[in-house]
Image 1: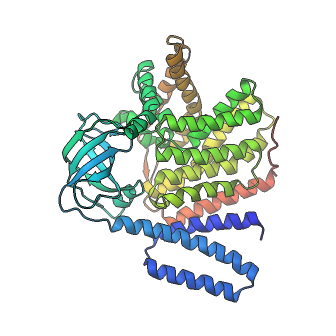
Image 2: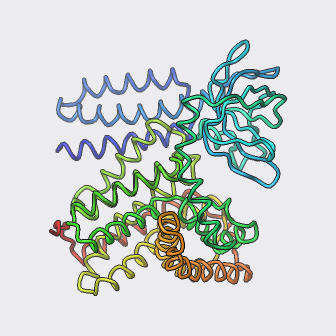
Length: 492
């Protein structure tokens, strides 16, 4: 067995192990004893060459199972605090504003007495409290562990995947302390995001400004409730989330801009990758954006450098690295699942599109490639949406044509914001076209959402999920055989 095959199956075994540990509960001691005995038996019974390879696979598999089980067990056996916990906390992420409170993530740095919580705390802070990432507070609250309200949704583990083990519904003390160096650094990390939010609010009216923020910064909390519901109704809520697809589009736009300005292809690729890093920093480096950026970066480099011989290995390695530090993502983070599958769809379908569209005009090829990538993403993520929500909107077929406008809306909105910052007044060259495109998207979504054609899909289980992906994979293999693909050659 060749080294790249050992690498592929080793990484794949690790991911399967994490999946097994996420879905099935096994006592850790029993698991370790059985795993060790199994590996020893393989070394004794099989020839050395095959035994060593199998031991590597089973070692990575058991390692994945162990990580997932240990993480689940840690959050399931957290200490219960019978009285209020007092100490110093720090806001570790940008607060999210809700209708009646702010959703604030804090971590205890010191406690007045006794043990300190080792996980993050979700605090429902009053809207009147001025908070930002890095703020230090003298804090006191009766901490509660998250509760599951039904069997369909594991809210406790959903929070655990973000490192949250406790909830504070009402703090008895929350006094803001003077800012220190660590707090200043963390607040400056989010400063570009806040500047961009303010600029977008000034160059466009609502809800178009909210849509521009959602496309560039990620998140539907910028949208009015009615428009947010319409996006969900039409099945386009993923459009306003920071995903591997959105970041791949940003990288693609930066690549074409670099080529237009006269850069060599390799220089343009590096410019696009630096642009991805800058974009993630600009929006405050949330975990979802970091994961999506990692996957998008791998896809982008694979597509543009011609190294598509092992694209799946690269994607699996990126996913395995994320699961190594956050094993609960695989089961409890829908965003991780959608980003992974969307990236996989782009990786598998983009080479086919590149071959089929190679003789088209530059602009037409770009437009058709966006359409093809959008359809590929939908085919890969739709079964997860059906499995998770058991709803489907036939309007998603029509609504997905709006996704074609997303790259244009993002480019014009960012261009207008950048010009407003550099040369106020000149930003109108981009602001008016951006407003037209954003208005077209919002009005179309509102109109489609008003039709209300959502269908409930009650019976879509694990078997249907596997069948969908087996058929989808078979179709891609058939197309790949019918239209043989050559590896990309780097264009100079």
